[in-house]
Image (tube, rainbow, N blue to C red):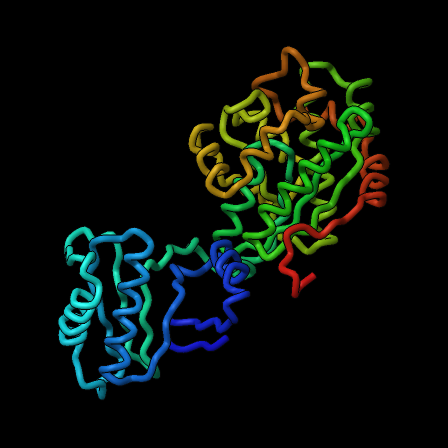
Length: 352
């Protein structure tokens, strides 16, 4: 790979192009990319490359185009206007099926005169955002639902490295449910340079809550236990915050009062990138990043299976903490963490 001002050049054989293009489609921090022709900085070579790019556009079904030019090297004989005029004329003459449309072209041929001449068409938009790892590391509470994978993707797009924790309640949740979460971690990991997924067995914690807590409080108390467990895990993985897929008032545990209860026992900041987003928007995002079809597979997570029929909607923090302390969960949570299993998901092959 070469780096110049404003450009990265990735050199690869044709056989590797599909893998490189797929990697670029999943890479945060770039505004766009294109497969590029490189030629000598002569007028003849540049015009020939423009013609070849025009033919390629026509073969892809494109019938209207315009030509754009950028000349960093001022020693090139033609200025930007001259490149556009002469290049467009050469393409029109060589590819009769193409016509010029400067306002709404189906394709654009780009010419850049730098240390060499680069010609490309059909540039693709990148994911933009910030390069992963430039904004610290967060621990994502990942379930098998639609929301949390999208939340992880959104924080990765802001430059955050991601680890994830999944709370498994075998035998109440199935092995298929766990595999579903592993698949989701792999998909999100493709965008975040990989995810270390920690599976924490939470069956004993959930049974304790089920046995001792008032039924309407069970979901809020379970979320409090998950937050406390995740904060302890974050010290091990050096995460600076927790990330959840919670959206305000989407379900009973996500009222502002209950959100306050669930994070009341931890000191780490809790980032909720979806907090003001409606379900339809979250679904569209899940479809875009490729997690939706996996998220809707019919394997329910532990939160759903242990949900009370009439949950508390606006919990009081003092009451929540009094109920939580009575559960005496510290030892159960520590044991669950000690027995947790880590798997690497979605890492690039050269990193694994």
